[in-house]
Length: 433
Image (cartoon, rainbow, N blue to C red):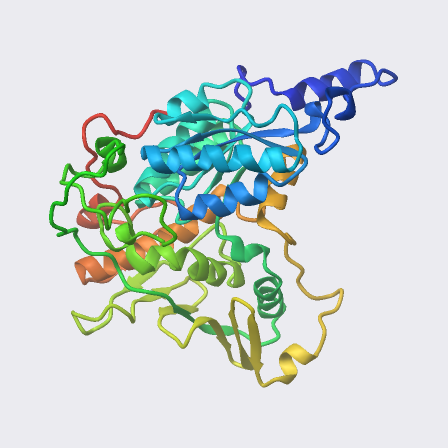
């Protein structure tokens, strides 16, 4: 059910068209003094939450689209916030898009979400700051693009699904490999039975995160450090967590448990996502998780699925599907099979064809207009992130766990069920849905 308080310009145009088909319903861009963009009534207005390196890719892509208008940016770091604002404004000047260069900048994302003239938001914060703004955006009637991994915990994953479904939002997870041809092709061949019955899937990503032990450094001027920490425990500033100035790196907060899940959730949200897709498990997951025998190993965890397939955290790069009639390996820009003849034989109309998205942002925008679910809908992103979280729990606690993917619980395991979530600092609890 849609939020009753949400009445976007798209809603207005749909109702107007239904009431007066013969009447013109779109104000031309030329009439507004701007022929470089789509008509004002047909532009998607977007705000950005989190303005680090990844967000610069998003703003660069979306601000260049004629059918999108960037309205606002938000970041707890003054330098990054103002830099993003200036760069977007400069781009609109260069594109000669008159009247679109007045970008607002916020420290508190709630102020951005309160804007009635913003249709959708892109969330590209550190991982521990994904779920709270995602839920609040849904409650505010905004559609959402949220970076992967979608959540910090299993409980957050289930809560994200509940929020998106309750408020009927279009939500795209930033696992953009689903919009790449080589991964789509690999999945179609695997699900069409071209390698026979899948026995194993090897997923090569980094290991689990560890507790943060970084020393105190002088505070970065202009950074709201308490907001950056959010739900995580209070600790002194360190530039490894929030780099100074405008950086061109992916910060190493990803290595620490307070904020992220290490390589398991970072690249895992890409590659375990492809494993889920290839096994046709977008609405499910493993039923057992087994840690490696070596108590110090950070690779080797096994995920057992109900159909007997094993997904193993190991391999020689990317994702390798191993069947009883061959194997297919896929990574960014790479796709090959053993034997070679598997991929040399084209798929036919009788083979499996999966949802096709050729560009991740484009798919999100298309689905906002159609109100269909995108290529990496919230449940897909949440379940792929949960596979990564389950793997981390196996490494952190070094014991086997049974998992019920439909009930989202460890059946009969009181201790493990406590691991589905973690304590949050006062003032940064998950919002009610």
